[in-house]
Length: 45
Image 1 (cartoon, helix red, strand yellow):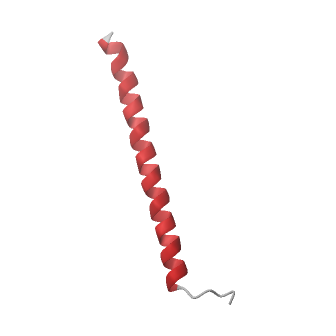
Image 2 (cartoon, helix red, strand yellow):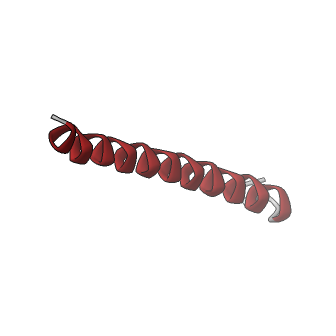
């Protein structure tokens, strides 16, 4: 039973790590977008 559940929990841990990295990446991208918008003057106005 232990050998059967081990790969499953490993897969779940990997999935959670991926989601965490994805969330950090999304936040970093939005931070960069905000910084660019703040530094670069709006060309529309």
